[in-house]
Length: 162
Image (cartoon, rainbow, N blue to C red; front, side, top):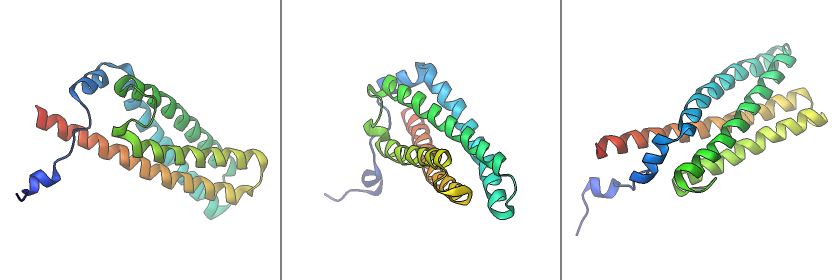
């Protein structure tokens, strides 16, 4: 029997009723909700400072400090996000609902960590460091878009279930 369009586009809700209840009850949801925009603000400021350095050869220290702040926030949101995932889904990372977001997060963390290694060793030099940071930031932007999409899906699910 042919399926209609809505049946073909149907998807499993992001959260079960129990997972949604745990998500809404944990303090880690608020922590994630506060850290995400702070990290995005640090990202936006840092992009400007990194580009300023690359275009003018001015402000290396400011760009570097901004990358370090962004990296610290990334580690913090990843640790607290893993705790959130454990509370909501029963596992620290790679819960089916957030598998691909976590996989891209690993790439983001790897690139930021590579930046830290490059900074510490001097292996890439200032321009290489900044290009690596921008590469990490591009990957972060993809990851942020993934999470915004999931937030939208969760809101749509809540509207359907209401």
